[in-house]
Image (cartoon, rainbow, N blue to C red):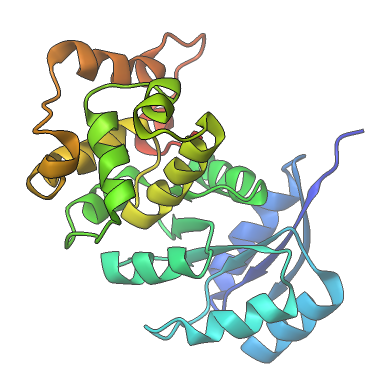
Length: 243
């Protein structure tokens, strides 16, 4: 028997609450525990029910301090911010607070399901437009070792080759990549390489002036453009982080 992921939705918009309730009731992957319309009601429900996922659509302070209280009430819950617009600054702060999803109120049902499924696994999900905004935002400060790793990634090296070049284990490379994905707002190797190219001036010393040639670009694109039996338009708009 497949375990259904439990969900609490928080919104003070009646129509949004009705739509989320109807959609999740018909979805075999999720079990909607309740819909909360106020912060005290939500805190109480989180404490009692400890859901797998919290879809948070209430008014949110810019500094996100209110999320800390909710996370203390239910540490095991993956939090998804559900709002019309998310600024790059808000997204950076939210990722640092371990928010696992950014869902627009205009998102399609397919994106809604993708976001909940991926966030429930503790992974990060956001729409492509937000990812690109994060990549184009102000530079992110990397440590010397992180800069070296990104420089090698830009050259097209695989994890084993990067580990050999840096004198570390392949597992340590994977751990570095996971940290880098969240730190720069990238979801996979390709977007992290794009970040490296955009910031190649800062990475030049560590990467020895590396450039991404056509073959390297194709190797990074390959996992994303592999043929699928039933391609969906949403697959190009929202993708999961791959370790």
